[in-house]
Image 1 (cartoon, each protein chain N blue to C red):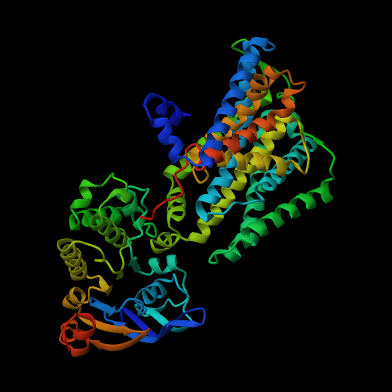
Image 2: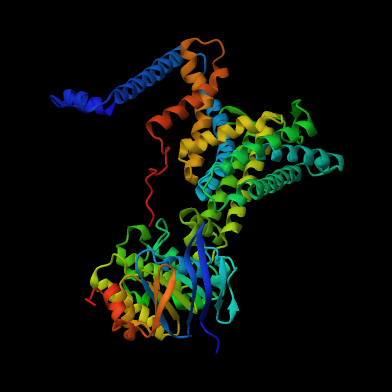
Length: 365
Length: 239
């Protein structure tokens, strides 16, 4: 719209724009105007309808940040692997599912041996650790099977193999654990809510948000400051040059998959704590969410994955109430994915490199 | 004393096409050796095979008496082989400081690294001014200095340089070649690959002429400068 606005101020500029622009530009402009109108009308309608109070919106936003931080954890795994291999790990969502189930079984085992009742606070980090370990191990296996054989070959084979791994994990889990929803345990102290700023927030949400932030901060510290982090950045920029300075490229790739898998495992457990139930198919739809968040923020960019996750979570949580409510739809919350993915499509059309991504014409130093 | 670098019957192939065919040459410790040859003669292929980026089809590579033919690249760095790659290949989104620091990645002697860093900055004072700048924003000559500094930070016994003067202004070319000579005087064996044959032959103790993947002439640098065939093919003199 800025083009049109600019052209309105200069005489003859509109004619000039019309002459220079193609029908593609006209369609893009029409889409922008259409989307902006939809959002504005929806916003006006939603806000004047007064269905929700300010406190409602605040708690929607908090929920959005919580689920967004979980998306961010998943997105980081996609973005780290992409940064290093320039490939999407399509099995990443199922790594998260495996982590979630590992957490479920760990919680069951801890309950059986009495740790949950004896040290309920200790149970949470142990369950998270189980999810991390399982996620890391599965992710390492995926690297070994689907990516390592093709390390020096330019080919799409790893992508196909990763999709295969995704189905193997999903259907192995289906065969072993069944398709029914599993209830996730809550360790006693996590039932209940916290009151703050006039809002009541369920404790699992607070825990998930805090845990996600801690893990994210830890990861960023590792990448920015540690020796491994420097090696990861070097391999991401130029694999051969990294090998020439003595970096074991294969080991760095394995470490990247392991870290991404561990974070997916954490995300799987945290998601389950918030939503209280899991299925063997959760890896698919949450994987797509994480992938969308990574693209939204700019794939290959760690800060972008973080931002993309939070933006996607907030859009999903606030969008239905803010925008769709105004159209008087019967169940706006059912349409949250329309908003999330609608935003993804808009980003891909108008800012393909994502919110924080660099343009694809990256030069080699 | 064993050879610094001993290459025997090296054959490197891209699919069915052999880019290097049975090349043999040795570099004595403390020497500057150079491989000259036309574009596509296989110079870069030889260096990439030496440092492990390219698989060797046949032949052996021995570094200071140790067979390194099948070691992965990062292991070769630990054995004292470093390369300044063609086109510099810096980590452009890292600072000059980080590029130099990562050059010492394979080492565990932190105190000595600090000393070597000071030495690199003394060799290339310009890098001190650019120290916190992103490597990708430097001029070509400065990037070449960073690339050499990064390789030196690995404390190599043998330094491979692939076209270090390519695309540089004449006075920067001199600066780079001077630095090569100085590094060599401090005890690092150098194998230099150049299209700038004159500059390379001038400083080389030993030179090899590579034609279509085969070494066709060997001699002292100054000897080859005066060699009739070299003069006509690589130095632009009438035969």
